Image (cartoon, rainbow, N blue to C red; front, top):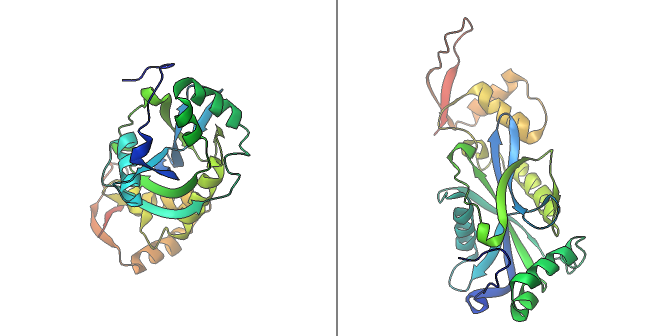
Length: 243
């Protein structure tokens, strides 16, 4: 195990040089769309997206699945590659680059510092998870502690990670119906109103109930179950699940 301040060792020869992955992990809780961020123990309230490097012995998709499992302990999760970030100055122009390098130099030898701080092309993925099923695995050895943050209350982030998150949100919205993404944010059964609330949260706009219900039923992706009795005087709504 590594401890803060201890010299670490990266097996550089095991990874593909200059290629990395960053994952935007979305979850839905209390009518809010949230994203999982790693809080760094250096810097004041400085965060990053969960990510890492790709082993020479695995595919890019397999690397993304592994990195997600290492952070959330979830292996069966919706995952979509949405964009490659390859700007030549994506790291050089970061306002926190000097802070990052100073901390990296304390923990790695010079060869590893040169490798970590060289130009990297980043493959962006977004994932959708049920927050109630996530078991966050805090990366104490990497000085990274994970937290859920509302997309409307984002802290300062390193490198171009806010841009990556922004583009992931656009991709999520563009593909929401096609990939039935709401299925990954809700419990196994739900009411039509709960499904509507997810849509309104993701798209940040209201949907008239009648039109929304017709749209979802026309997609023929829902199976209607028994009614959800709550004991109130209001009409009990039907429960649904995705086919």
